[in-house]
Amino acid sequence: MEASNISRLVVREQKLGHRRVDDEGQVTYKHKPTSELMSAIQLGIGQSIGGLSPKPKRDVLYGDFDVVESIFFPREGSNSTPAHRYSDFRFKTYAPVAFRYFRDLFGIQPEDFLLSLCNEPLKELSNPGASGSIFYLSNDDEFIIKTVQRKEADFLQKLLPGYYMNLNQNPRTLLPKFYGLYCYQCGGKNIRFIIMNNLLPSTVVMHSKFDLKGSTYKRKASQQEVMKPHPTYKDLNFEEFYPDGLLLDADTYSALIKTIERDCRVLQSFKIMDYSMLLGLHNSTIANRSVNRTTDQYSKTVLQPVWRMAQFSTALEAIQSNADPMSVLLQEDQDLLGGIPAHSSNGDKLILYMGIIDILQSYRFSKKLEHAFKSMIADGDTISVHRPGFYAQRFQSFFANKIFKKIPTRQSHSFPLILNVILCRAFLAAKYACVRACVRACVWCGVCARACV
Image (tube, rainbow, N blue to C red):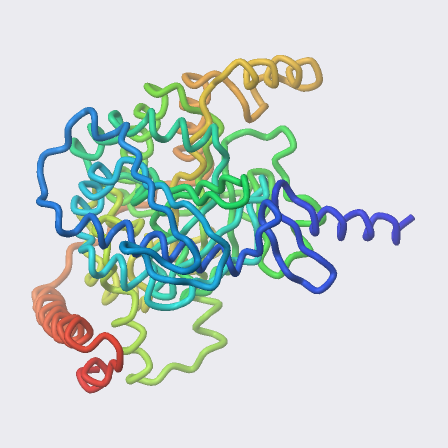
């Protein structure tokens, strides 16, 4: 019996949605090898962004959200496309002017965007989504490429005008930052994908990871998931691991809950539900026990995650908090910036990385039927799929009362500590600016950048 269960788990792992894994370990998506798909995507993105750069920037018009540009890539090449070794394919770019505006809003320069996505092979993440999506990660840890279904791509395109308005009003948000929507067509197959900000930096050890919705019906990680090297736990697992929640100082708690409430109002206005909060926990107390750090190692660790290419892309930037990341570092003796400092009830120091994901699910007729059917089996209020208003309220209450707890505000910093913060920030900013300038001037060899460091 046990052997048969393991066999079923293996089969389920090899076939998930459009994702397949053969006996030799090769991964395909819609029968297209993901290695070829990755290279074609990079080729298409390079051509799309490069072709948009010469066009002058202007205000975004309502009609820009419906524009779709298409480029054909024959294997032998053409006047506008390079030759390649893959099958002929067509590459579509959705709302190019609108997404350029979104990238500009977050301070992403076209050359940096191309350098991040197209200069080196992408890293394919081995842990697929529940729907069998394919995930690629850029080598600099900035961007995630995720395949989406047609209904999700269509919904995002309809969502763009409202998304544009929301970002203009407030770029500080835990909602996904969308940087592009594309479609790869080959052999009668359409593979749509989006480019987003990366929430969980791969350079930081995540001691635990959770997908939280605020519901309890079947919200516990499966046996198959728990057996993975880096499992993603769910709501009931969190309540088991952290029954007293995660402790935040008063200012950070208020800023985080305020951000969650504002984001939920936006999602409710679009009739969106079934979204999740992806929460990654780095336990600094455990990490410090297992790693003996020298002063040089400490300074290098500080330099690496301080600045990201995209503004407001880290959890600490996303919430409207008065917390200064460098002061948090010096006060808490943390070496990982960008995350939100917290404590567990047993006193462990934590760094939280988080963001709202899976927002492309509207309360359609099929979702209403799903809720009605599951309500006959379990309490309807405990089911994940629910009407947007109830879902938003339950989501907010779950994080405000169960996940995060408020602790008293710490005393203000003394003058010497403030002076140290200012000097440290000035030094790191000057050194980072020097490295950035060298990298841009000498992209291919990187000798100048290594000399700066």
